Amino acid sequence: MRAGGADETRHVPPARTLVLLLPPLLIAGGILYDFVTPRGFTAIPFFTAAPLVAAPFYGLSGTVITGVVALLATYGVHVRLGFGMDADTVTEVVTVVTVAVLAAVLNRVVRRGDLRLASQREIAVATQRAVLPEPLERIGGYEIAARYEAAQADAFIGGDLYAVQDSAYGVRLVVGDVRGKGMGAVAAVAVVIGAFREAAEQEASLEVVAQRLERALAREGSRRDGIEAVEGFTTAVLAELPHGDGVVRVVNRGHPPPLLLYPDGTVRPLPAREPALPLGMSDLGSWPDRADEVPFPPGTTLLLHTDGLSEARDAHGVFYDPQTRLAGRAFGDPGILIRALAEDVRVYCGGGMTDDMALLAVRRP
Image 1 (cartoon, one colour):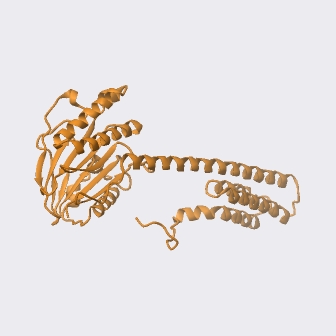
Image 2 (tube, rainbow, N blue to C red):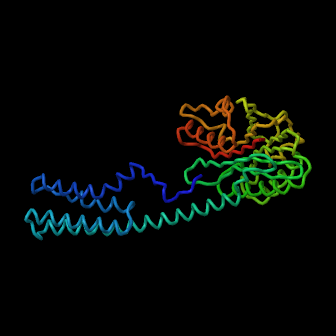
């Protein structure tokens, strides 16, 4: 993403431009209204509306100036009509002054709210970077790209997760989706990622890494209260790219299957041969984890994603099918792939998504 510089023009939406012009247009309209209507008509609604419209969009000085100009216009119109300081003039002047003062107070309230919101956004961004740091573009000889798309505007992190860890056994990856929302989900995300990074470096097999995540979530669940202690779980898919072997191993724990994208545009899903329960549900049954192994030739991209992608819907309720949407397309870079995919799914949903989405793409050059 190119940083803004002195030569970069800032685009202002037309709707915002109209709003910024509305206060002076209201004052001008009020003056014109008084000129073209009989003496019994008043333009006071125009003059009182101007500072109120300015309050949430202008600074304090701009709001005060708008109020002063509206006050002068009110008095000037009455002087032109020869009313002087009669009862109607005094009443309308006092009305405009009162509204202008209220507009200044409203402006301060709005600005303080904006500062608090900006602070919350900064905290959210810092939390996201701490819990879900952006992976390096190249790890263990593989090209890497990741993206987190929040369904809610200005939300930065939820229950979706991804992580990449190089190890003596190969490059290992995880993409998961924690049940629930809020800080409880964020805490579980931190537990899963922390346990994954430690286990990925220490354990010789991907199956044992999955079991370590299971135990970490079990310990986390024992510290929770209420329904989360009973029903907390995480769907996850783990992948391993051994150094120099040209294969990918996958362990799937109740998660949407990854996709292999070949250079010729072919897209192949990698469903688990033996379905397994999500992480954190060992109380309901236990099956040994078995990694599925498939060839991973040069130029191929492995795409892992959460169900925010595969369960996105269009206006008719039809699910987004990444296999169909990506078939026949070639992406030479994983970053280009996930950016195009994120944009495509938002267009498909009409700009509004119902669930967060995490994407992780790895390409073998």
